[in-house]
Length: 108
Image (cartoon, rainbow, N blue to C red; front, side, top):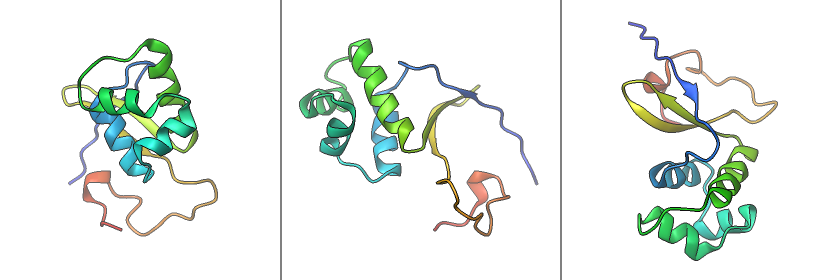
């Protein structure tokens, strides 16, 4: 059974705390790694991810840009919500199961 799910790319600056945590997990970055790559303070990232405060737009954009540079894609799925996916690295050969919908692909 194949199910089509449409999505749109999330607009820059719409990053949520949950997406930030998930995106870091996808690329195996610590908060300190994201701070180094984005130029945003580690304590600012920690506070944002814990829901203690909102970010200034410039910090939203810096975090999102740093994560997008390493292949993270921020998406909105109508009726479901926001999420993150990871683009395959350039030159990566397709692995078995890559032609399947993402929720049915084997774990690697």
